[in-house]
Length: 192
Image (cartoon, rainbow, N blue to C red; front, side, top):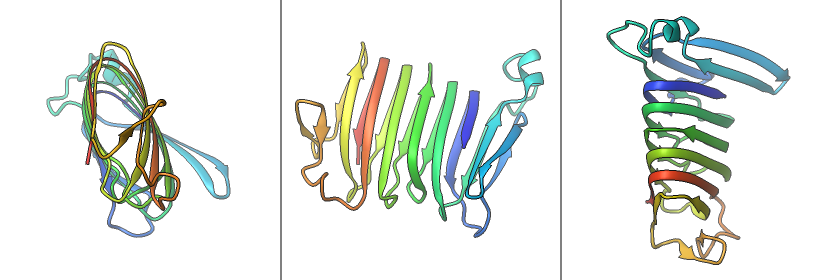
């Protein structure tokens, strides 16, 4: 699933309704594209409508581009977020996210990693952004950082290694995250 949300606010969290992939409210509107890849794989892309950009970044809409989206926790998900001048709260705690990519610009992002997804491969690329990443207690992590002028603060429960940081029990943990950080300016924090 791909979210193309360049301006405004974006909230993502878990959905309580069984048998439903997603539900949400989309201030400013949404264009969706659904592409069935195979019997068990479907790609869904949600993006800001083209006419909003023609009318300016808010499209003349007083509520702005405020999206609030709930996703199923019943199946494994691959998520990609493309955000720009935005504020995002991505609460994936109760979701089964196996692959996560975030590309963001001058933004604020608060990310809650899954608590029981098994293995999550995550890559965050950001420019002049402030990013706070919550890794739940009980979830191991291996963290690699390629920081330009950014400040990167990592929770001391992750041990510094030659390659980055790692949980002492990473190899044997049932739930773990492999996190790659590519940062330009701004600040990235990894906490519990």
